[in-house]
Length: 251
Ligand SMILES: C[S@@+](CC[C@H](N)C(=O)[O-])C[C@H]1O[C@@H](n2cnc3c(N)ncnc32)[C@H](O)[C@@H]1O
Image 1 (cartoon, rainbow, N blue to C red):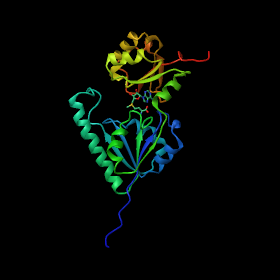
Image 2: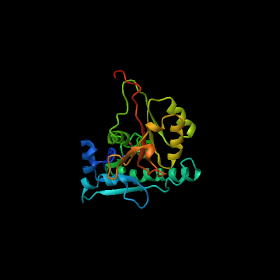
Image 3: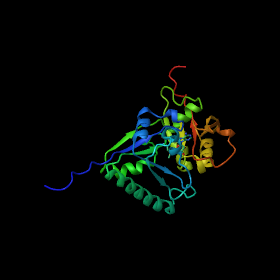
Image 4: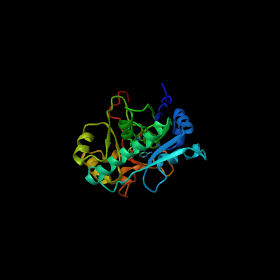
């Protein structure tokens, strides 16, 4: 027998960083981020990247290989638009290839994820493409919504309350149907969907209960009744909370 022993593959870590405040990261996430030889993260073109910003202080000037995966399109294009789907599919395929080059070299990668990696994250596109070939370890994180209802000092579910999590990208009718059927709700991905969400909340008779949270637990955090929010669209990091309470068993 000749030749070199096969090099072992690197591990892809999907690291949940929590809702924004670096103090809300887990000890495990901190350990992986500060020891991995390669750090990867998604970001908009021309921006530092939110996930990268969360870890900037803990990384300091530590030299690691950094892989910035830059989205080819912005949210200016609707998600169901063919103009969006094709470039973004290619982008995820190319991103997975970039990561696999390092994993093939035996280098571990910490892929930084805002909130929890398994909850509406771009990480899922890497997970689906790479988990059959490489070892993958997911480090859970505090979700953005959890940070937001805490920032709003607003308990979200009591007793038998049903909580529904809704992407604001759903149609008005789909939002309305779910809002009518739930006690509590969290509406994510508000952005350009703000006006549609407001109409659905009004039609469901829940508009006055809704709380708006922008940049929860981060610098520039804003919390207010949704009724007080005048500007539209909302920024990327914004969420709408509909606290429960109707399911209380003990009053
Ligand atoms: C693609 S999802 C990613 C969710 C993330 N993986 C998590 O666990 O929260 C992005 C959406 O989450 C919501 N979000 C996440 N963190 C937030 C925060 N700190 N403040 C406000 N909204 C947040 C916003 O609605 C945003 O559009």
